[in-house]
Image (cartoon, rainbow, N blue to C red; front, side):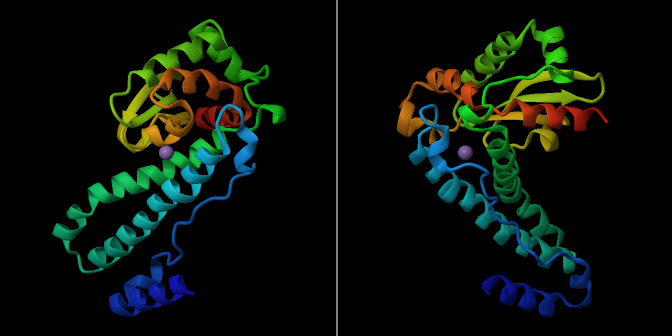
Length: 225
Ligand code: MN3
């Protein structure tokens, strides 16, 4: 109800131009598994807080900033548009990154950690020797993130190569590097501290047991089109 009221008020304020602007807000996506299903690799407590508090906050803040952006654009207020860019990058990035992250995960007893034969496996074998080689590359880069950020497996469309890299804070991979995200590993402390304390390498070692390689392979196939 609140969303409808806000959208209506916004449309009324900015006039006809607002009719072409989507008035639906960004929303927190549901998970396809229960919070406890990634145990013992990621605790239910971490998953619940991560999803309902952290991701939810990015969505809430993005909606607030997006509303202001719509108004500023309607008024062609360039100064306000520029002032909103950092908050949109952070919270919009947080929303994009976590939306990928949840889909990149799946319970171990539902296929987590299993990479099936196919194009992705062939590419991984060609570039990293085998899946272990890729995991080591991702772990090394992810452990090396200073402060908060993400480890990534991305796809470089300019040369058809897989790329392992990292981004700082909530910088979204494609918008900030041009690489298409296939797998994102959240290495913010909120993703592991309650269970792993300061030992990020142990979190990285265990998270591969709940990686949804089928989802990664789908993103790879899509990226190659
Ligand atoms: Mn997070």
